[in-house]
Amino acid sequence: MSEKKLWGGRFKESTNELVEEFTESVSYDRRLAPFDIAGSIAHVKMLEKQGILKPEEAQKIIKGLNQVLKEIEEGRFQWRRELEDVHMNVEKRLTEIVGSVGGKLHTGRSRNDQVATDVRLYVRKEIEEIVELLKALRKAFWKQAKENLDVVMPGYTHLQIAQPVLYSHHMLAYYWMFKRDEERFKDTLKRVNVSPLGSAALAGTSYPLDREFTAKLLGFDGVTRNSMDAVSDRDFIAETIFNCAMVMMHLSRLSEELVLWSTEEFGFIELPDSFCTGSSIMPQKKNPDVSELTRGKTGRVYGDLIAILTVLKGLPLTYNRDLQEDKEPLFDAIDTVKLALKVNALIVEGMKPRKERMREQARKSFSLATDVADYLAKKGVPFREAHRIVGELVAYCLDRGKGLEDLSLEEFKQFSDKFEEDVLDLMSVEGSINSRNVIGGTAREQVEREIERIREEEGF
Ligand code: ARG
Image (cartoon, rainbow, N blue to C red; front, side):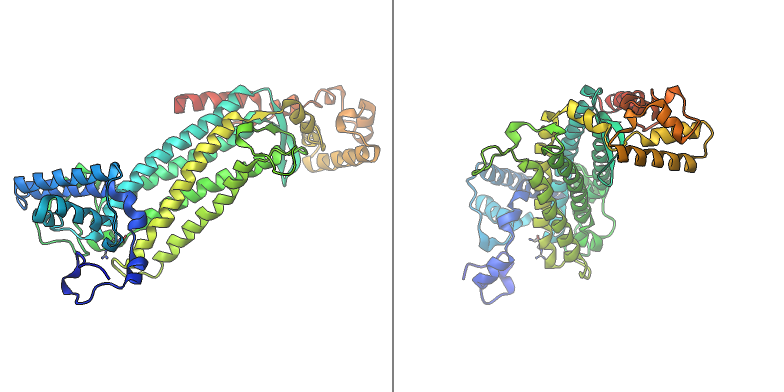
């Protein structure tokens, strides 16, 4: 049993200890303290401007809040579980420092609009950081693309060799995934950056607050327009976690490729030693743990998304204590995605394509078959028929253990009299790649153009 709560006026018994343990959030929401204090300072300045607090009172409270912040930053702050959450820990300490005037801070405010404000400020800052990290990752892909324009590789569908492509083209495919991820976060920010302060518990407040003033002080773009929605809306959290889940999904696809590519069977890339680990029993091993863990951690972020959606689905208006469960999934998703973005940017920067091996595989599995069919089609053979003829050519080669590139002109002619000398020139990986000269295609000219466009747009 512990001392009286800040809200303890109407209670005769003190809180059961197990209930304290069950209901507390300070063990994890303390990271909101800087935002909580910034929100309180803005609120006090507004109360002063509106004549609700005297200038000396406001000064005292602000000075006290800054001292609390300093104590927290210096690790001297005594966090107390019996005070439930970050808000009441800060307020209690403020009152210890400045005396009873500290009790005026909460005028015209509730923890309901306070916590909504704090989390919005926190998410805004994290989104800004994630946007920067996404850009650094995109730059790593762009650099790989720019510096390895001569590297050819097989492109896959169904994980079967399909057509040759430039390694640079493959790298820029990832560039685009992380570009869209950035756009999603920036779009979410529009809905995050709105001030709920002044909504109070749920219905607004009878004090003459200037909501727009606090919003401006805190760098919000505007104020929420419905107090009931404002204290219970956590859409912006669900959206943010969804955006994190999408980034993790993209990183997980990359990881899967890097795991495959670094096997002996593929042998497409060399990962930096400093990002791999060895085995305690097999001395020859170099394992791609970072990629594996990125793939694995995607699961937790998906879990965070399902957690928040499930917390929200049964809630009647307005604030319900269930909403306290919004924070751990949010923090976990953001922490995980930030770390994953950092470490994967370094991997992408440090990996080295194994050019010879990729080239060797690029011509395998009849990867030029489409080119031969297109050749016939361009000479007037209907594409479906051309497709059949090349299918027969492939079967002929398979029977003899040959590739298309091993065939003589005479052999080609056995299948169609449309084949001429120039079909032999077609049998090169570069020729195939450069023939795909449409916008967004893998021809070197197109890829070089994209690299330049990206440089201009991103300022790389
Ligand atoms: N710790 C609470 C939360 O995170 C703060 C709001 C509490 N409000 C209340 N009416 N009990 O949701």
